[in-house]
Image (cartoon, rainbow, N blue to C red):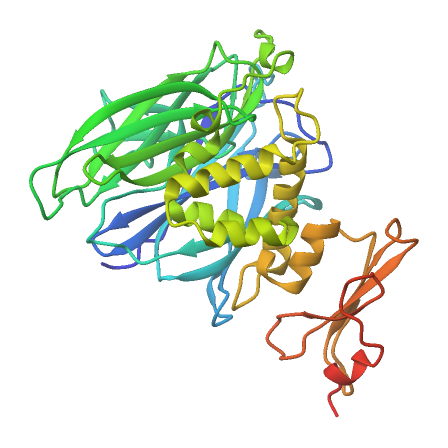
Length: 458
């Protein structure tokens, strides 16, 4: 398969919420799909030209944005993409400008198996200070041809099934899927469309009917929508698309989960996508009375073994020795799910609220660690800097010291509110970007007053 690389742009009219005046309104999302034995990535973007600087060109009034994209292999440190695109549009001089035209685009290309850092920076070409930058870490895994699976979920503003234009940039598999990269829905347009693909639904045994569960969870982990359908075996990919009417739900962040289940073995493959719904017309009654739905109504009720094990690795730093030994002794998925459910429930600082504030704060720290400290050999939460960030939060001050002729690069973190003020010193001992904790003044942490010798270049 030849590399697919195309950039498209259209104009669409949608209701949008207000945004900061000093930052360009730009949203971005992506989804991975299988094509033969390779992975194809589709990247969706949406640019609101409001507040961009207008200029004259050939007697027309125009705006112009520069889209800069970098995609770098985190193992080889080589760029797969490093390129700028110019996006232009004419500015209407008449008509109703109260609803701005959004510039919507799609990039599609085949990506080799690897872990990537992904950076998108979009700026007004006439005002470089009016811009926005988005950073992501992206893992492209091998396509498994011997196991059933689900693609990523693509959220959409609309999916056309009739009078479909095969030449549309949003056309695929007989449909026109108008992506929603903002992952935002409002009461003015409260219908969530989604698209996904199901793969390898052929098993080496007697004929099986798969079960596809569709569940929508609110921010408290409670299911507010649930639907199940049977899927027959097929050697070809099966297209799954549908709609969920959100109009009866309150303003909240939601997680939409697709679970493809083999009923004979109870094995499942799960794909999920989060989005935000703004609806001032419905009052959230769950805030005043918390529903105790148990593990089956929580996010852990659909966790796979790998998801359980990964979460335990993330929370291991705050687990007791007894809890660590207990989890290691489990050999059943049910026991692991129940353990994690109780683990977080016991740490809920305010059981009277539907949220688990402690869990939310901790998982924000996990996201921070993964975004900032992922190295070529391990995820951010597994690094020394990640561990410290998980335990103590972001530092009050972070000083950087680049390498010179005498020492390798290192950095110093300061926490002013811990034990009257403590510091942590991390150094790139091996030279591969994996900063190790060399010394700390925090009680119970590594102490080495002569830490400088470990990063000396002499």
